[in-house]
Image (cartoon, rainbow, N blue to C red; front, top):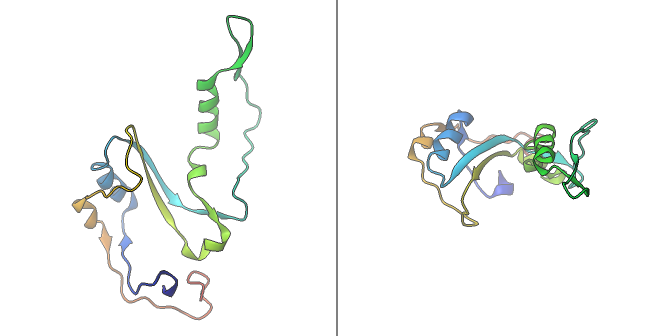
Length: 139
């Protein structure tokens, strides 16, 4: 915990309920995602989508184009929220868990959301214990 310059932390005991509690106070909320970060050496990621059919279409004027809605559907089903969770491998000791809330409206770059009921879904575990050679703490 020295890396974070802190001596305590909270634990979210029910991540789904926590996400729902916060979403009720997020302006323009339309959906969300949560999960562990995916630590990797490259910033890009690869995913084999297999054969993708039905994206290329012929417009009324005879020109070739692509069906944007179909392309987005294929990407969403094959990739989903994976691009929201990558992080450089050098940060793997953080074992970060992310919550992401989608909004239909523009929001400020930093937004403070007050959700008092979300506090009930958190606890304060005991003292932080750092064991020598623990991969999770980086010690």
